[in-house]
Image 1 (spheres, rainbow, N blue to C red):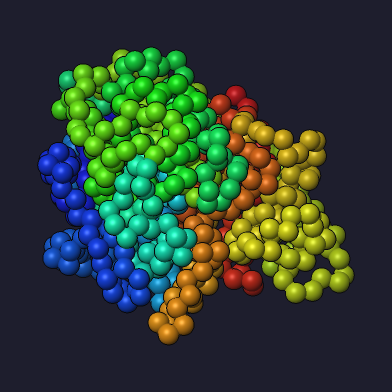
Image 2: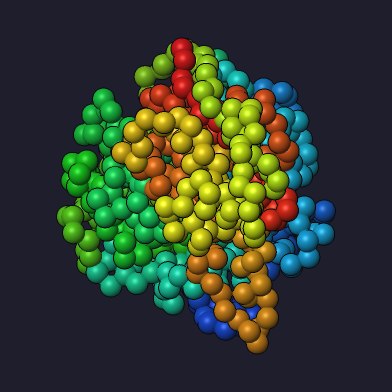
Length: 571
């Protein structure tokens, strides 16, 4: 993919150039907030001021949606194609979208669905094709670029507009506080004194194409050469101690590439104890510890759905100036590998870099960006897939390969729990899952039982790709109850982790030891054609031989649906 235009909107700048200059001058918007949103505990974050937000607000749109529009419209100012055409796809990367509007009123939930929000944004700007939302926790930004690459390089679209954005709220901050993951002071990535992360708000947009006919190569022409997503299959919230997912993602994007041409590796660098250590292990395993490395959370905090795209754009802008940005807050190395880090900005003459990121649900991603690349013509060959097994679950029925499953006559209590007891009953962690994860766990297990063969051995050749409309609405409701009453305030970490819809893909990966690509997408509506196109494009642009995919939506105990499939790749 070639980058036609880009933009960063953050509390320290409204354009990419503004942001670069702010970082070069050691500016940050990180500051301490006390009593913000009625939260009892203080926190440090990078937030838009009321004045900044007021200038960005669009009539009829939420705070989150207005931020996305601001960044996307700025990125489209200089493009020369008709972005309302049917060969343009809008992809939105976000972890929680409009969750700051969560009130507990079920009648207002439609505005909380990320796909509906994306549709509203698309119509406001003028996009006419159906948008896709990537909800893959902290790796959402790179996962969105991965999806863009799949769709562009299989000629399904000519252009992709990819925006990553999140705004902060009591919902998100209290959740991270419940996980004991936040630092009261500005974060210190990779430092021996690091104690946690800061959160941030931002939006970042890339306009991309794979069509060299519309790309005008210059001395600053950038290509997103490869993007890879891999799962640890280890733990939902703790990174793998052996960094398996990050290592696999790095290997994927660097295969055949001379690493001596790398200017730097931009790491996730959350300043949490385990993430920074895991990334260090990944670089050591990949033989990359000598390459200059950096992290940008000391300037922006963790911007969640925006992080992967923002940090890629800023890295690209810095490399254009021959600069390796410093790691703000870093003083003394506090990880086991001898990383090439510095708090000061450094110079470079190289023209490529790697971006790494990881997140809850076991997700890891890496991206290779190259300036002035060799021009590669031709797209990925079309790939089909053959479905071998299917399962469908509703609140009162189960069918496998189109045939009703014989159920016990003594089903009682929760339907999903009854199914678990009758057909699985060997994974007690099931009882801690939220409704969406339980549904995905049961459906995938029934599907894999039907497949037969050897199970629970590590696999890197199977992807897990799930879709829905309501994201994690059921878990969001339950978590909101724990913070709604200031006199009975008890944010639950066990509930908060499930307010990320991609956690269900992590549960499936952990259960089955899948270390392939895991993705979670939210659509405005259930559209089998879109699902099949994305799955086919993913297989066409990866080494995966098979995929577990389908629709998985759960609103309540009386309103859920699973339609999952196992499919093998066919040329």
